[in-house]
Length: 171
Ligand SMILES: Cc1cc2nc3c(=O)[nH]c(=O)nc-3n(C[C@H](O)[C@H](O)[C@H](O)COP(=O)(O)O)c2cc1C
Image (cartoon, rainbow, N blue to C red):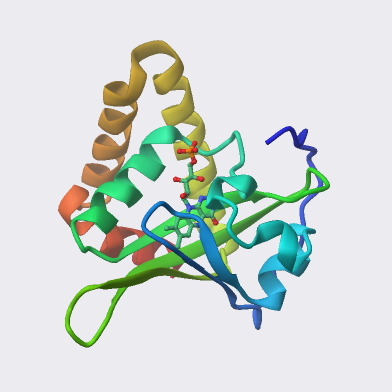
């Protein structure tokens, strides 16, 4: 949204739990103080805005497609995300995005709980996402999904076991 990314990293500490909730369109309905502090926005700058306000250009499109396909199917998703702060800085997290339901089973919200990404995971995911972005540029979403599927297969998994593979990579 007009923020120019820099290569300055913001630290996510071990104890930080970065939480936000979204409506069916993905607009932010709640963010905890750690969320808006690290993102560099005030609370009022974030509420009712799309979560893509912190989207980093280094994130492959197909990762978000997978996230939304899962969420629309009612499937919780563990996903590594590089986010963009208001000042152009970035931070990496492992997000656990869940579909929360009301007692009657109807949709309540999407809730994302994010923790610091471990260094060994970064060494695996950063090059993977770079390859996926390159594939998107040359061959579109299908090519990018193929890179992801090949990667999951190399880890002994598949799209169906995506969450397990990501959790294992986090360690
Ligand atoms: C609860 C929830 C949390 C989300 N958290 C993030 C996030 O931290 N960073 C991000 O880039 N996208 C996040 N998204 C995904 C965004 O809705 C969006 O799909 C993504 O930023 C890609 O934006 P685009 O499709 O407009 O390019 C989240 C979605 C939901 C429902």
